[in-house]
Length: 247
Image 1 (tube, rainbow, N blue to C red):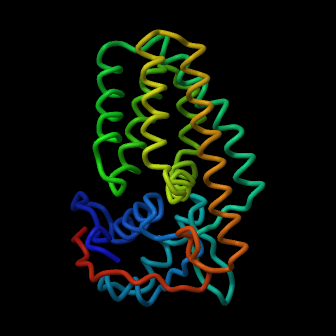
Image 2 (image 1 turned 90 degrees about the vertical axis):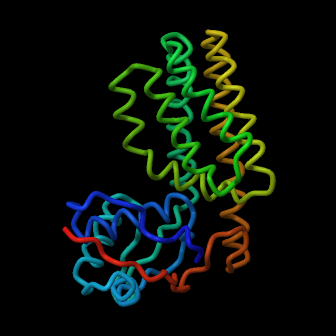
């Protein structure tokens, strides 16, 4: 893996388990560790200079978050969502995303629009490698602009899974550029205070994520290999050496 796999800077009071969890979570959500890859407890512990206990606890937490699957005698793997799970989750996400965009068109102030515009500019001009974080920032800004705490809580519950699914779908040819255009359409509708257009654009974006994602997952399962960027189950993820932080 590249140097981007190094653990991010974290507050010194974060426990070693918390550091390992945060590091693995970031890699999974941003596509640095791909679906189906096996997560070796001894290897992760070795690179963090720790025992296996904090690694095991970090993986258990990630399992509870829906990002890792742990099976007896096989160990932990990055979760590959089932097709029906993807379709059901994205159907709900489409409705919520559309509602958030409609409310943002009605309620966003100038600061909200500026945050959304900055994210779109970063998507249009930035490299594909930085896109997952930028897309997450855009959707955070969209939720803020919607000003609806109940909607925020509903969407937060599926945010991690949706971010991982977007990362998988981005491996489909041409998705990076198309995604930037889709976010621009949402922004323009919000700027125009057109709730109908904003909802339509947000729903269309989620539908295109769904189409790209299912194409990647179907191609991968059919090939039984790492086609489309999703690793075949059984591959062990190599991690770069990481110095544990005190705390």
